[in-house]
Length: 101
Image (cartoon, rainbow, N blue to C red):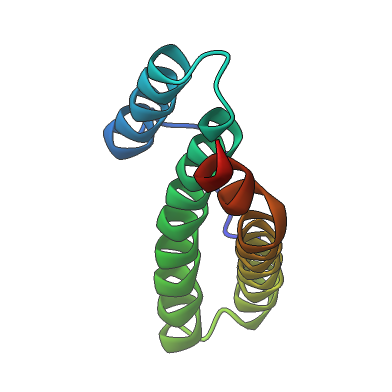
């Protein structure tokens, strides 16, 4: 839409969050707290993505890129829904199971 070829870029922040998730996997391997820890790591990724997509959607709006804004807002809403689903899962079963152990 912008006349440029899409390309990926390594994100140091996400790499750090992934590293934290790997540490959780090592530290809590075989323990009930593992699932709660992994859910928290997944939420860290979601929160980062929410921040980024929110910013990009706002920039697209300011630049008058309505098609890009619509796509970014749709993706932002998906990320927010995933975050809410992870919260519900953690609160309903993962955290209580970890606490009970």
